[in-house]
Image (spheres, rainbow, N blue to C red):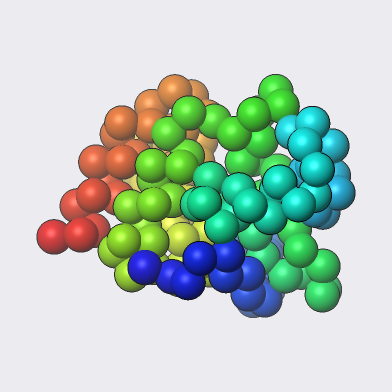
Length: 125
């Protein structure tokens, strides 16, 4: 499992794969919480954050209508338990999977989190 609260710089490919990002303050505003609460959510595997150009950022897809989508935390926890680094977890969440179809984050946002967790859990085997 990655160290609690780990936030690391990401490479350009991962940055482009994720697409739209929110700064720490933008994410806090979108969730109607303090920036410190967003940091706690990262530590609790409810969100993933990354350093982009020296600033903590969160994928915009991880916030829907002021909340994190149901199933996101379970998937992130399973990925951490599988030994994925935060960057590897981001890449996995945003890489298309023909068996879903689409990306795992798209499936989670479409309330198909169980399918995503099954695939993440298979990574533990």
